[in-house]
Image (cartoon, rainbow, N blue to C red; front, side, top):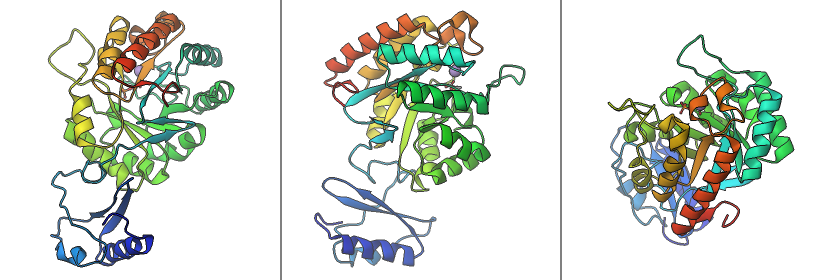
Length: 338
Ligand code: PEP
Ligand code: MN
């Protein structure tokens, strides 16, 4: 739209888009409003829109991901997550156990990560484990404990949702949905999370390309849910010395290709507690908007992912290091610079 286009003229364009059988998506920027015209592969005649008053120009978005692309939105998206924001100048640190195991384990961890400077709490209640014989999570009881921990500490909670039918329940107990690596291409789940209109973090499939990640994001965005954060969590390579390989390239590349915030999960990306701090520093130096880190008061007793879980004191030192790197990058931790 032309700069300063009136709300009425924008409405008229939206109406025209829908009349022609397309779906309209609105992106209001500081300087410019962009109307995304989404439909099937039918060719669109730019004339249909360019003849409208207040339309400045029609641009074809060449990438297959349209709403995730920077052409649709020039400004970076800031995602609300409970009382905090991801994607602004402040770097957000999310921490907590891989799995919620008990009330005492969760509360002890929640207090410790808050004390160390974490901005949000993570914890899995529904665990998609590689083996059906491994601990599968506490389910609903785990969700209730997460909500209680959030209430007590004031930290917003993110937890994984693994099935489309669980979306309403998980949404009731948490401020952000986590879509795990094994579900990145679960399109029924992506649609349902999109339809919920609630904030979500989409983790990259462990064998997925950046383009596949952005196309998965598109499923959520196409439901007009733009509160979406992407997460690089390590990919499969020939290397077996670490659990996965952190694709650090993904961070600056995603920052070029998309307006969505990008966080890194150094815990799953390395699989090894001793490597998590270095991975975290690298992620922030590469331009990540945040981290999601596994912390456990007794990693040796953890029911999942103990080898990559930090003890609270290790996490506290990681936060201090990240603060320094964030400053060096002209940013800061969330709260200090918001
Ligand atoms: C997790 O965060 O504990 C998890 C299972 O992550 P991912 O889906 O990346 O393996
Ligand atoms: Mn885990």
